[in-house]
Length: 136
Image (cartoon, rainbow, N blue to C red; front, side, top):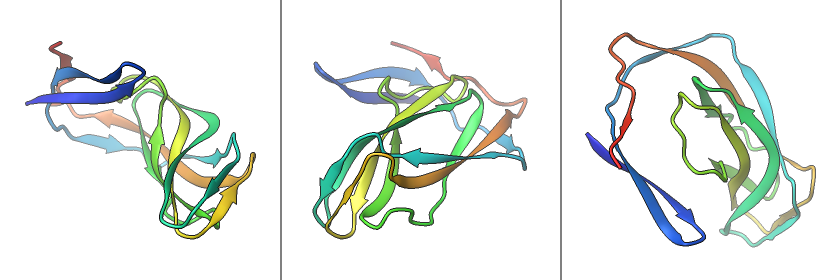
């Protein structure tokens, strides 16, 4: 199936086209917790969604990241993890350096505030897995 992997750059929206398909994987029962820690101060109004810079978290290749859904900050909840280098295949290492936070009340985030926690689990692909190939 053809899919567009879009991202926003300084020049505007850009995308790469891939031939990709769903595939199964096995997830390990042993994983790792990583803390999402703010790297900047932000002031929020209720119902606002803002990008917040965080201390870098390296995500190894062939791992699955699952957010812990317990709220960790009184101002809001992390709703998305971001890599400033753009989207990457799971076969590549990634770096989380920003998050989107949805504020459920007025408040602020300070540098070094714990925003959330993620679970990182190694995965193994099944024999039928087809690696996505870039078309353009």
